[in-house]
Amino acid sequence: MGMIGELTRSFRSPMPAHLVVLRMLDTKLGLLSYPAKLGLGSIARPQYGHCLLHAAKLAAKLGRKRISAIEFGVAGGNGLVALEMHAEQVTRTTGVEVDIYGFDTGQGMPPPADWRDLPYLFQEGSFRMDVDKLKARLRKAKLILGPVESTVDSFFERENPAPVGFVVFDLDYYSATTVALKILEGPHGNLLPRVACYVDDMVGDLDWAYSEFTGELLAIREFNEKHNHIKVAPVQGMRFFADRVPMQWHEQIFCAHLFTHPDYGRPVADFTQLPLEQAR
Ligand SMILES: C[S@@+](CC[C@H](N)C(=O)[O-])C[C@H]1O[C@@H](n2cnc3c(N)ncnc32)[C@H](O)[C@@H]1O
Image (tube, rainbow, N blue to C red; front, side, top):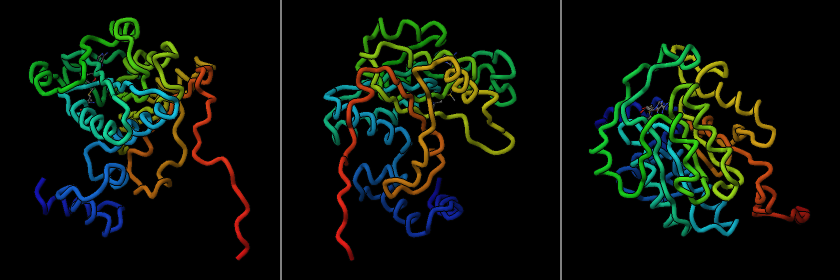
């Protein structure tokens, strides 16, 4: 997008004008720190970076030096490439190493199973991957190709991954997302006690009409109904925290709570006392 197009789009956003200008300057000139870029949105896919940074910080507090991040639904690979870039930044910031896995058929969307897969939005054959081109571009991410129906169940045994701390759910379909969510049923040793999740297909205009009755949100609702000790819950009010500029993706971040994970109750809060302040 050209400078004029970018300006026009930016000034239509609800962000205050001075932040729009700062974001544009930082995007061009790289003025801000990595966490500041995530807060302002002046870096590609800040939602990936925010979740990954959080997962790495949690891992560090629990004494872990390595974590895994997963993208379910890779398509051309732009998300996986962005995840690699964020992994580098996160390792530089926290010292925690990140392994990355991308699950995809490698051949685009399979046919929708029924109305729950939102066939008015998603069709067979969309989002094909150029496998060779993507493999040549990836620096560390591992592609796991094939339908998730035949790759997810064996993942932990095959890879014995470092604890999974961040998962992107971007398979579009209800049916595939129900399978991807099984990742949260893995061995506790291969999962952080709280897993950051980004759910891609849940916000949009009326023509998309996402709801809890179809697609990824239905898969999450049913997963929660089936599991007493694992719940995938939206993160309440995160747009108000850390001087963050409100952005759409704040609505799309969930946390998978593994209540019976041995580390679930380990203290990680940064503040533990609230002494009485001086009278003014
Ligand atoms: C919207 S695309 C992913 C986009 C990507 N995350 C990005 O940000 O560029 C959805 C992907 O899900 C994959 N997919 C859908 N159903 C699948 C299934 N049952 N098994 C594996 N992959 C599937 C499709 O091949 C498609 O590439």
